[in-house]
Image 1 (tube, helix red, strand yellow):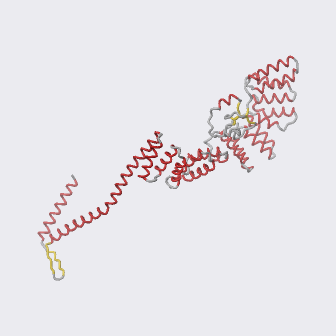
Image 2 (cartoon, rainbow, N blue to C red; image 1 turned 90 degrees about the horizontal axis):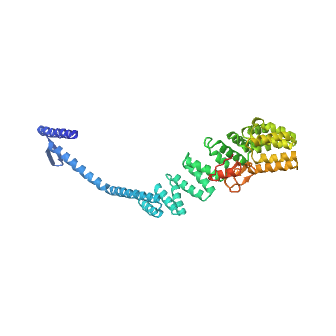
Image 3 (cartoon, rainbow, N blue to C red; image 1 turned 60 degrees about the vertical axis):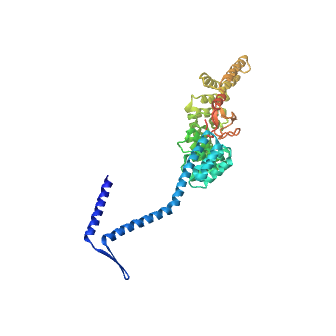
Length: 438
């Protein structure tokens, strides 16, 4: 409505201007050589307006004619894009339905209409992979890598293929390139950490694991494994301390720290480290290391008392005290410790076998000795098995903790267990390559 009002106002002004000029009169003179042309002012103005309108129409028509091919190309491009998008949608549906042949047909149509765009190349790779044509899929991924806007997608596809083929050097290279293409991508960091575990590069696995991401036990195991690979003593010592700090209950870390302290000429610090670790979580390997240098039987008893002083009631403390006392001929002291352990209900097979040795020393080959031996042997057969380092994937027993079970090649599954029960409990654990220890 407002536009119509303005149009009427303009028309009224135009009519008024035309009437005004006509009333004023006047002639426009044009002289060319001997030729003289004179026309009224209003007619000259009218001729100018008509000329302007005609010229504008001619120019507009010329512009329209010149732009016709471009408009035709735009319409054709829009139609191709529309048809290409429809082909992409049909290809996605075919992939979701698990029909790779149909998907490949639709993707070829889409590539013909849209060209080699990142999404058509990615769909091509996925369809070829689903059809079992891995090399054709990799060709599409390599084409993606050459594009700046699809480089990360191509590297991710090639990395997945390399990991499936267990080509670990290639996978590590591709993972580093992917991280350079997309800095900070959590998926790349996770893949690099998994690759480091699979290739047993513990130092890189530890570096790729932020402090808050892993539990204390797993971080301690990774740090100790990295220390075992570290050629520089100073860095290895730092990693061992990091492992012990991450999990003070991890006996292998305490043993490594104490061994290095003793090698550096600090046996007292080494014993303090072992005592602290025993207080937190007693372990027979700690006792072996602590008592290893004591040759005298009575001195070993005193050393065992010093080791177990702050965790006196633990079953491992009672067992080591009973064994050392028995070896020193202190049968009364040994019997008190072992019988207390047995009556507590927390004894394993080792305690009952120690009672067999006890009665053999005290009763000898008498009838009472044989009866006691039979009783304790029956109890030992029914008792829980002694703990040991054992791979929870294949059941192989190990003399000490290692990052990887060399029998089955599974990393992170050697744990301190009580035997068959722990093996059954851990048998269903997936081989995820995470280094862990108990």
